[in-house]
Length: 442
Ligand code: LLP
Image (cartoon, rainbow, N blue to C red; front, side, top):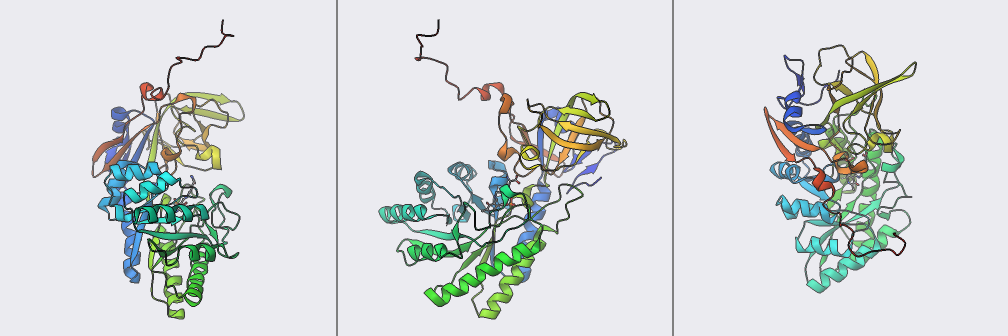
């Protein structure tokens, strides 16, 4: 049984997280419940920062908050002096609500709206990562009309095809993101921005995909961008002060996943940057990274209560839980694999082969197929590990299921940071029929 971070088993045979008994958490807050091990988040963040320090590289480690956005996690990121990557007005609003230092906010997105860009100017954020030509025109309009400055990075696609799920690769040429490096688009975008009186080009950004284990892909992307930087110095006399190499560092969901320590991927990139800058006598740029999953993924655990079980003789036993694809779409969407334990009976042999099913009206709503738990009994507490990234962030109210509550645990203390949705919440946007009457309704 593989435990993560501060997870442990207490003398009652219960799983603990951050020194807190998960059975107590379930009793206090109900289930499904997403529990974060905040010490693990801190450890990961510190490891990323440390690796840059060791290499003598000035850096910004930006939490890619699309993985999990909430006021409280932004507050922890602020405590750790992280920067923040936001991808929408909504995430920016959440960062503002957390009073996140604006100069450390970076705004991403392949189709930012005019009003989102204006909002970024209103808040005087640190940097906008420009993704397309329309955005360049809009940024010019906004900055010129306000006579206000803004830092920009150019998102480029380095032509790297990393092996991960097709939906989450982004660095290949056939991508909706960024400017192509090879066909001249990136050069055109640069020239449209270079020497603009209000827009300051800081450099380039790339992100090659998510849940990537291959160091080669990260090294190659860093090389391609460094080569372009050298070319731009020759062609345009421009020296990039910043190189942003994105996120994407893979984590261990199951025993099949064999990632390096997250910071080890960054070391690979650092080596490329250090050797290429030496080789080309290029001033060492600031290096920025944007980890999301590798900061919060294994820090999150979802607790569910079991309900019915169904035996399909000769085939499988379904154990149904009180959540499902509405709070974790990843198994249904990507075929993502997870591991689970019987959190209230950790000492019992986990020898019953079961399939953990959700409660949504879809046959495909299975959280884990063929896993081993203690013999399931109604009311058991099941913990699914590594659910900290892209679960709550992608949750829905399918079947009008309410979204779970979220709790942070650390040093034996726990705090509710997102309350559970209620039935009232579920109808709060609904407007009862008032004026539309049909002749045909009789
Ligand atoms: N930077 C950019 C520009 C990104 O697009 C992303 C993720 C990240 C950083 C953070 O990547 P990470 O370190 O978390 O791998 N919903 C999918 C993942 C989508 C990733 C989107 N972009 C999933 O559940 O696997």
